[in-house]
Length: 542
Image (cartoon, rainbow, N blue to C red; front, side, top):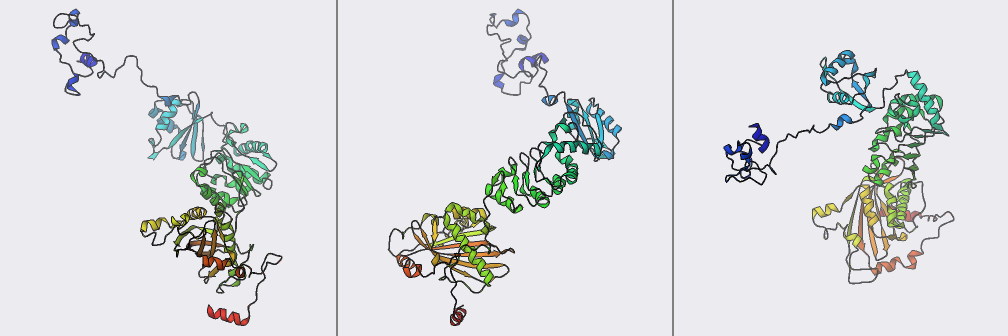
């Protein structure tokens, strides 16, 4: 039966497609000699088939003479080289007993070299690739004294020289001297330093010793450190180096594996005066949006002026200290706030309007004025009484149509929800897509409420001139007062109404445009004193 199986692939005729099996006469199949090649009429079979059957295209035996099987490529990895084996919890088992068990379970010649114990880890080297793979497969499977042994293998250049702490420190000191020049300490590719060959030289292993040497030799001299190309995925291991470098202002972490911004927290804690930082070729740059990346880095390092070898734009501050423009004297301003608070809110909105009108693409500079979780919405009413002119179109502008949350144009709840923009990046994107504008300053009104629990409600209203139309607007802001005196926008609701020619004529009349006195030499309009009667009337009206 084995001969039949080898020739026809299987002896079970009940499996597979029955049509593929020819009808066979067992007596014909057993014929041997020349008669085995004759058909029923005695003629020679010219098809080359034996017994009326050919296995061409049929299932064949899996056995192939001379085939030795696929080579196991993993055995050839790092062939002829050294392998470093690290075994954890070395205090929980005896060394001799461990190697005897390893020989029995792997069936390979282990022959460990340079065995030593460091930080409760047993480390040794072997030069047998098959044994290294067998040891790797035993991780988590070996048990000694009811303790599971965990270990790992890694390709190595050879056994490391085990030095005392003083000898190790002396070698690192020699390497450090060669890497220091002109207040710059170059620690890039530290593990490849030729002076540290065959000893523990990875940066995370030598950081404590480096910190001691910097503290002793050059604590006040190091202004810049380059940590590039050290396979770092965290900075916490560098605390001793950062703490020892008291005058550190420039750091490079290029070509490492830093994935998240919070990994830089130790840098903020131990080197808060950083002005130059480079994270080029780190995953964190590819994971995050560019604007969010810069914003988060700036929050950690307020003094930063260069990021990734590129100078950062000057940070815009919405503070009460910067008073570039003052409201014209024709404006109204609520008296419910203290004078210092009034000036802060007033200056805040004047800076806001100035940047908003500069150019649509410049509106990204308003980012410091908005909170991370701020809201923005827009509602528009565009009714006309039949008057049509170049500046008074009857059709609502396109930049307002797709953001309009007016119930008449946006009745469906899901549509209304989609037009509520949440988060700083989303809000700035919408602001940049609005048409270029020019706020008519002498029409602006700022109305504010009382400061309650650090929050202020303010309404900015007036007249806007765009390239295609006039608009009357009102923006309601909810502001949060920060301890440093600056303000943050939590909610921004814009309402726009179509203007009419009569209103435009009033706004452009000489009486209004020339009523404000000319600014003084310092660029500040002189204040107009109110009489006692005027003050009493104003208080009564409020």
